[in-house]
Image (cartoon, rainbow, N blue to C red):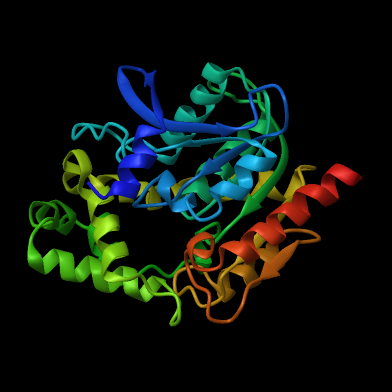
Amino acid sequence: MDAELERWKSAGQYFDYLGFDVFHRVDGLPLGEGPVLLLIHGYPFNSFDWVRIWPTLVQRFTVIAPDMLGMGFSDKPSIYQYSVHDHADVHEALLAHLGVTRCHVLAHDLGDSVAQELLARHEFGDWSYAAVEFETITWLNGGMFNEAYTPRLVQKLMSRTPLGDAFARLQNGPVMRRVVDRTLDELFGPNTRPTAHELDRFRQILEYNDGGAVTHKVGRFVADRYQHRNRWVRAMRQTAVPMRLIDGPADPNSGAHMARRYAEVIPDADVVMLADDIAHWPQLEAPDAVLTHFLAHVDRVAAE
């Protein structure tokens, strides 16, 4: 395993979620001595997505960053019904396990859907474990409104058709690697595309613990976005929790077009657009800008 990935994994720990091991990192201020920040990563990678903003965040917060089931260093059961609701249950269970009842949230991609479900539980009182108060929520690029979401062809084939099972058997082969590499390349901005070394790290995260066998199953969360869209949007429209969207406009999946839809749907929408060449992974492509706008959001709310 890549040395930096190994250090990330070694710094984490596991908790038991209904018989499965869920990897997570808790770092920064000791619990109870400062604000708590929950980081909710996207698909198909893991908490390592936050590596470039981690050093600054841990100076300000107790930072909690789990890997969702089926991804990263958490268990990847092959016989399992992966869903946004279950991912939300895992995050809720982890917060209850740590005794956290109040936190900020920073979410990306699939993490946006998980945060939408958690916000809906906050608004409608249907928690699975224990109630959590959200001080702020910050969204990064993600498919918050499926009517505006435009995934790549390989994403559609893997998550929405029976071809996903066939592709899974070829996941570690040279053809599928080229397909995945090309898809990743399309999701980064023209000036921030990953190096060969970074692509290799992404592959290691995907393939850890036979992850290629379940990646397409985890990707079927897109169906949840259709089923629960109105409940999630209703929660976003009525909540008093301060929200901000920080968007990389060059993202072909959920870039400027998603930000426009957010502004249309959410009352008094707080939207920050990053530089024109930033795409789907703002926290990796423009970490300093993400930190600036995220911390400004938190500080403004704290000062009110």
